[in-house]
Amino acid sequence: MFVSNKKAIKLLMAFLLPALLVPAASLQAVDRLSRSAEHSVYFSLADKFGAPTKERFTQFDCSDKIYTVVELNELAKGKHQVAVRWIDPHDTTRENTRYPFNVHHQETRIWAWLSLSRGVGAGMMQWIDPSAGMEDFIGPWKVEVLVDGRKIGGGNFEVSC
Image (cartoon, rainbow, N blue to C red; front, side):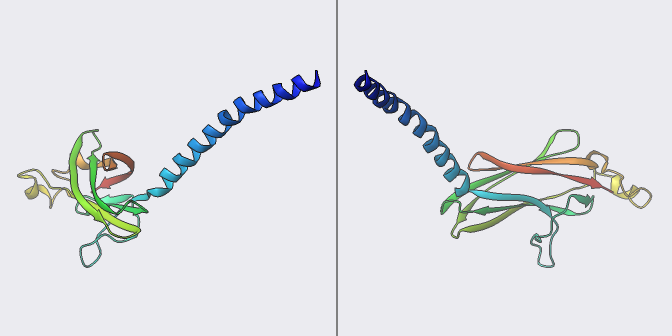
């Protein structure tokens, strides 16, 4: 009886051990994948040279040039594609920004921007009402960022006049 218990334990271990190791190996692969493309998405304004600052904002004026900044770490070197989808307060896609970029270093910083424009004829009313022609833009906005067709993040900001 003792011998058969030893065999049973060996058989049980032979079947259980691989089953226990496979999920651990899968988790390590997923962890390696997520670490290989760490990122940060935030909103900013321009510096004196017209590039976005590293300062993060969530509130913007109607006249601001709004930057969505994406900081990527450890993305594979080579050619990539970014897509930024700007969604207005009425849940309408107002703008899609797409462009290719190359990664040469461990850290890469890319951005897209949005400038809001008044409707035709609304400019004359601006001196009476600063929000004239900007009503569709006022409120909470959403942004979605994709790199190589994969959603990596996004965020929210508010526009007021």
